[in-house]
Amino acid sequence: FAVWFLSYSTWLSRNGLYLEDLYVTPDARGSGAGKALLKRLAAIAVEKGCGRFEWSVLDWNEPAIRVYQAIGAEAQDEWVRYRLSGEALKAFASGD
Image 1 (cartoon, one colour):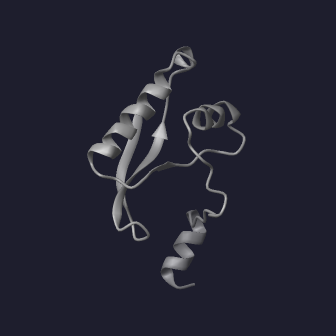
Image 2: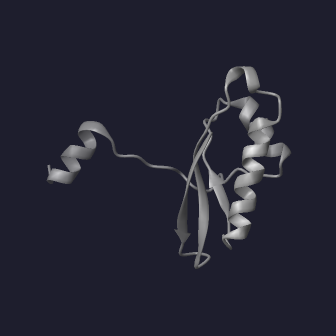
């Protein structure tokens, strides 16, 4: 399955498609199911006039990274992702 949503890029002044989660059951991995899901999402992005199709991957997930590189995706090394969660999120939201 794939969980995705449209985002908006102020750089492109266009929507983008963001893939939040991609999951293929262990017994189906290597069958092309993941690539088929990615291809369908790419088609949706094109149909909707999106300027990009993006997702994140953990740096240790080498099998996934190999698939992404094989389809022509490029790592975006210039961006650093930040996160607020848990107690840090609550503290910041409350002004502490």
